[in-house]
Image: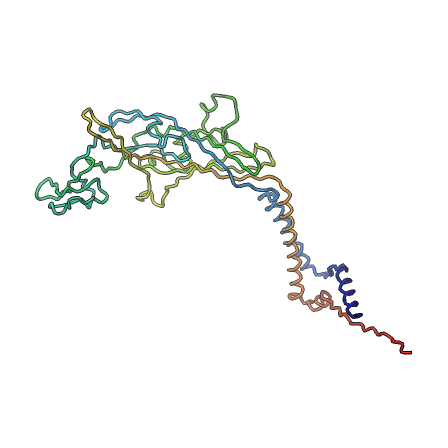
Length: 394
């Protein structure tokens, strides 16, 4: 029982004792310089990179909420043998017309007018529809990459030449040629009005890319310029393609895709004046070779109508143009005590690693490592004390 009491008392004393580290002044200038350089490097990293560059004293919100509304303005005139004289407004050349964050602007087109459902020869450019005799055209078979269903008849100009299978479909078939230049030449002067609203929910902060002014004529006369009009949301199409590193007329001939990136990097400690939109323009369909078959952008659409006799017709248009993708990214930062304490604590922990490294150098790499080891580690042995109890027998 007495031995148990002694052990319990020793455990309690050990628990309540305060233990401190043992410091040794080694007088080793090389290791001392190494230690100071390590400390200065850590301090420079914390102050320069963590706090100044990365603003590690701020809480960050990168869950940006964004809304984009677009509107295109401008007119163009075309005059072709198929379509005649036409005046194009945003209602005709903007697809879709609702003003979304992805829009397509027509710059050129090929029209096959007045198609009617009936029988006609398939295009000779459709390889699966070429024939020399009627049996080459299986009746009821769909023409792969073609325009209709085979009727079973081979149409040839003469007996000594090959021809194409007759099909049932919209006739005459589509003209398969490529435009040599953009038909909507004035499309370079069209303008896109990009209205962007953003919000950082963590800080209940919202802003738009439009200058807050009561001047009603501001949006009518301004055009975006990074230095002069950074808050003008109106962009000329020719300027957009130029900033993306492209020639508008070349790109408008076969079409393409351009990304308009709006970047918001907001330092809310400095006020709303330091939360400004930055624009970047990139061609998204760029390839290693400009002659690649992957370059360009086009699609088809048709307009249906009936004549006075009630017969159904359509005009098929293959349109070429530029597809704009408006992408919004951003983050906001504001001072908070938690990230500040975490980054300072992390820096102090890294500084402690410098002491450990210098101890390794002294213990294993210096000539006086044995004497340093003897001073560094001191072993205290606890000697168990025996107590005797006198017993009176008398």
